[in-house]
Image 1 (cartoon, rainbow, N blue to C red):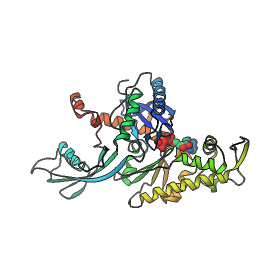
Image 2 (tube, rainbow, N blue to C red; image 1 turned 90 degrees about the vertical axis):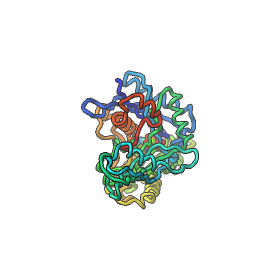
Image 3 (tube, helix red, strand yellow; image 1 turned 180 degrees about the vertical axis):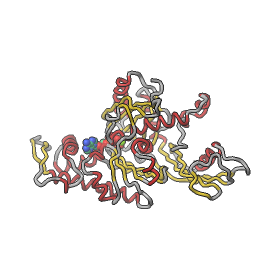
Image 4 (spheres, rainbow, N blue to C red; image 1 turned 180 degrees about the horizontal axis):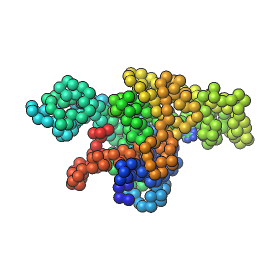
Length: 402
Ligand SMILES: Nc1ncnc2c1ncn2[C@@H]1O[C@H](COP(=O)(O)OP(=O)(O)OP(=O)(O)O)[C@@H](O)[C@H]1O
Ligand SMILES: [Mg+2]
């Protein structure tokens, strides 16, 4: 299988690899999925390289077993507060009477990229947010048109160089080669869980992970804003463990088996079995109290995100929730109450093959990286392999189409 693409999602609680390819019928087929628990990253940053390497090796070996071949290249994702976005305008003039070329479009993006970045940061993505030609707005792609002044607002996603280097190092030390710089996890996920219509209408994609909750806002089809909150679903587990006086492991079991985001959904007198801390004796905990703990923390997370969305107008498609934290029962209802807009759970869409295996918000980023890798490979692989070498690994993926 020569055209195999592998997405590698490096999370706080797990590493997930997803292998697939584009079929002759232009469908995206998931061929293998490998998941391994991981505690080697915190807030998207490598905190224990050996633990992270072991998890990558395990997840990748699972995928290799399923696909029946060894894998070399992987599309690596990154999340967390190290990745930051900012919008910057670019402007160029075109000589009179000439058609705008793809090179001109690249040139206007390059001018927008000329911003002074804080020391030690690198650009991950430069995403055009629409063009203006001689003052006329609403131009999706100006190439082939006539005009003199070409302007473009570009959303530039940067990340700390050391964070990027250590993620890449982890992957390389595990025996794999990243296809380029890491891809912003939610940008990737948008390719697998959001429809184009949602992105055009305006949507907030929220990934509730282990120790981070990341948000990406899409307006008019383009990435418009990103934000990362250093609080995730593991914090709920800690709250339960403190509130019920149980171990973290026990609290995690309780959260997954019986947790609900809405205390009002819990039946009166409902009890959940668990083991208390210290004596390890079985105990019954009131379901309503557990839901109360979960609701309080989840509401706090949503309110913080809502504050970040305040200045954004036109989220007509509402909110889409992904990540393991989105599996909590009642979370969409709670989200709807807090955000006061439609909320749905985002699962990977439009995939064939092992689509049932990845039919969960947990796989949003890994499948997104697969789709992102396939789209970039087919749309931007230079015809001449020499060009590819010339452009260098870092620019191997172009973000011109987002
Ligand atoms: N069925 C479930 N019900 C409730 N919560 C769940 C369920 N399954 C997983 N979770 C929670 O989801 C969280 C992990 O989510 P996810 O796998 O998206 O995180 P991650 O990608 O490893 O972390 P991050 O994105 O923060 O780096 C954990 O806190 C876990 O408790
Ligand atoms: Mg994650």
